Image (cartoon, rainbow, N blue to C red; front, side):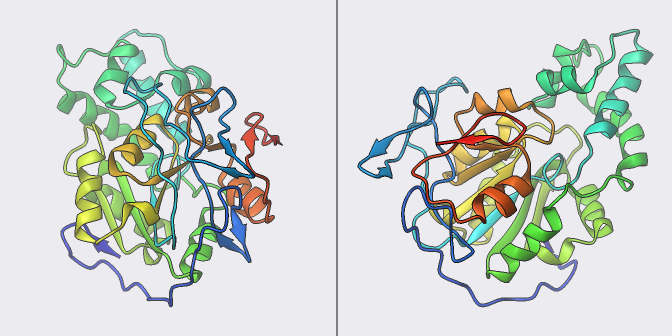
Length: 306
């Protein structure tokens, strides 16, 4: 694994690359290999049929932009870009405890899991305003440092999400390069990944140079350029609508997992494909070899319907 500045933090083995040919827009795994359409959206039920196949759908306008064609994997799947917080590491409860310390200190209403997942978003400054913290009265630098004063104390006790290690190993065994793109401060990010014992799965880790968690788009562009990553053969896995924004900006495919920092309903509003859990997406639904033309989620419990 390498830092984004090129400094090596551990050795990463190289594996022969397998072909990941898209056989049809509806086929997700073929002989155990990942294929097909990751993002499906833009219609009433997210389906766009062309004969027995899906044609590229339109990215929905839930993010306030004109709809654009979604990216479809073509040829080999060469790179997987992982979000970190809420996708790889299960830090949801720690984040809520940490921000509730800030809110209680100021006499503001604290958050439950449900309310937090409905209000959290990027940039964090906007989310802070939603919950009553005012960056114009107290700077983002001060608020972020205060939050991390609590958060950092518990971070190393947070576990990996279920299925992450197995999925990392599966992708690595199939010859894919893997990267982390996170809004976390980069050194803290590197330390946490090392502590979790998954550093060896990643070619590089890209975080931010500060604690304010504003946007990952510019860092994502640097990641693609630095590592010659072809967007149309790359996949981003994340847990927030900002990950959908990042994928859209970078031109990569996106898969959202609703076990992190935003609710299933908020993720569905992006028009992107959403799964209840990573295990469901990779080791259950996709690994089953389903070849239906289109599946859409029936809820966080993992019910799927053609």
